[in-house]
Length: 90
Image (cartoon, rainbow, N blue to C red; front, side, top):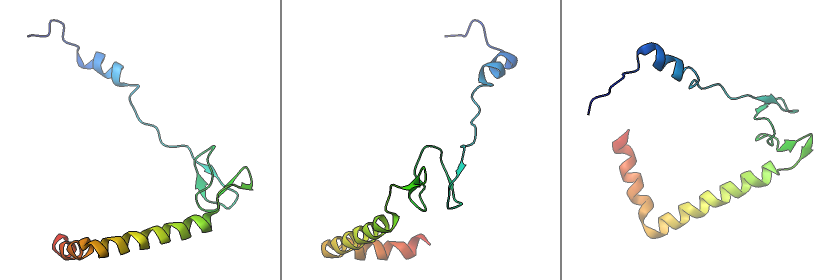
């Protein structure tokens, strides 16, 4: 099948002129870190100058989860296989 009326470069360019991506807007937190607007700060856990996320507890929970995952992998024998594969990829 043949296109009857081919769109020229000018027409295509005009259509695509609205497809450009814009950068993310960032707001400064009280602690000085950059964060996305209307969201809690990832570094201090505050939103509207109130602490809404306990960052320390979240970090500790993440450490516990990774330790538990590593322990489960070692128990199943998959951790040894992953260690053998890592030097080959480097």
